[in-house]
Image (cartoon, rainbow, N blue to C red):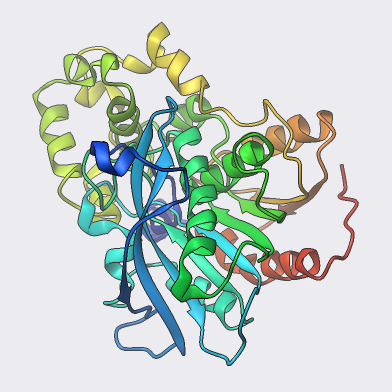
Length: 383
C-alpha cells in the first residue's frame, strides 16, 4: 500500500485508537461509591445524523476512580433497546477508540448528532437486544484534562460505567444483568484493563467475558513504533494524557515552542484533525529532550502495561498482523503473558488486518463470542 494511502487510512483508524482522562470532583461528587449515579438526563443515540435506532438513551455522570485511587466523576451514555423486553438483559460496557482530548470530542457529545465514529458498531449490539454503556473516560466531557492512555483509570471508568448502567432506574437493568466488555485500540487498552481489574475492583459484576483487540499493551513500544510515522500524533497525545494524570512529570519542561503550540492545538481539536497535524512528526521535532527515556516517565508508562495479571473471566483477543499503529508483536506478547498466568484466552490473528480493518472485520465475530458467553456456553481458549 502506498504511504499516502496508508496515512489516509490511519487518519480514519484513529477514530478507533487510544484514550483517557483526568478530571477532579467536588466534595459532594466524591461522596458515594464507584458506579453511583451523580446525574442523568435523557439524550439520543444516532449512528448517523438523524438515523433512528429504536433505543432510549441517557447521558450520565457517575463516580469512578483515578489511576492513583482517588475518587472522581466520569461522564458516559447508557443505551437500551426499545424492544418490549423488561428486566435484566445483557449489558455491554463499550470502550471507544481515540476521539481526541477536547471535551467536545466525547462520545456522549456525538451520539445525539450522529457523529461518534463507532456508533454504527454499537448499533450492532443494541440490535441484538443488548444494553450498552459507553464511558467518555476520565476528564473527557467532565472538568479537568483528559488522561489519555492511562490504563488503570480507563479500566475503572469502563467497569464503573457498567455499575452505573445497572443503577440507573430508568434503564430497567438491575444488578442481575450479565455483563460483557468490548473495545478496540485505545478501547482495547481500556477493556483489557477492565478485564484485569474486575476481580479486585468490581467483583460483584456478573462479567461473562471481554472482547478486546488492537491493544496497545505496552506504551513504550507503541510510542517507539509510531515516532515519525503516520500515528505520530498519538505519541504526544499520550504524553499529554500521562502528564494530566501525573503532573509531576512536567511535560512542558521538555517541550520546545513548536511542541507547546502543538499541545495547545491537540487540546482544542478532535482526533482526525489532530492526526493530520501530527503526521510523520518525530519526538525530537517538538521537544528539547525526549521525556520517554527519562526514568520517571518510563515508570509511569510501565504502570499502564498490560499482562501483569490474569483476567478472571474469558477473553477474546485479536490483532492485525500488519497493524500500522499498534505493533502486532505487542498483541502477541499480551496473549503470551495472559496465557502464562492461566487466563482463558481465545486468540485470533488477522493476517490481512491493518488497524482500522481489524475493528470492522472483527465486530461481528467478537459480538458472536460475547453472545456465547451470555448464553452460558463454555470456552476453553486456544493458549
